[in-house]
Image (cartoon, rainbow, N blue to C red; front, side, top):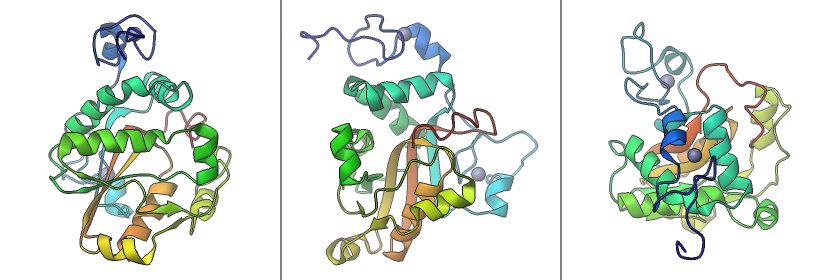
Length: 241
Ligand SMILES: [Zn+2]
Ligand SMILES: [Zn+2]
């Protein structure tokens, strides 16, 4: 498509070359998450924490086995995700896939089942494409994984979670996902990697992980473009769900 529309930076619209996704300046403004990271949730760990697992994960172990995010969720990564989600900037997918594959490379093995967080068909129709599916497909290509867009379905169209408390959010997604008998058998003993654009409250990922665990999945990984780190941006935190 390059000859039709010259590629532009997803944040500032400056013309760029090839599949860089961002111009040099905007790339510099992104807060990449790098080691030391919690081996479980992928949150940057402080020098005070000595073990590989962060204190919150030790107190409340997540339902998944590991998570990795390319960026901290801040204004820059939020704009990038909004561009992908609502401005049809599918051209940034290759760059995003490169970044998430980079951060999760030590965790993903060839043959892993790469699965997007499913959208309800109504929302899919309204939004025209599932941005998480585009990311999952590109990630599967890069990691020699098995792309599985429809093994798990969203059976309830849950209302947006913007104004909900943590407890309400968990209740909101309870029983929202379902796996039919055929796919249940296929998932038995598999390693699954869930792919989403942003990780905020974690309610959706927790519910999906519980459903996958009930199907006998052996290992559950989560890969997102950006995750909330600490307690900043609380007001914006749930806008994207
Ligand atoms: Zn830019
Ligand atoms: Zn952790």
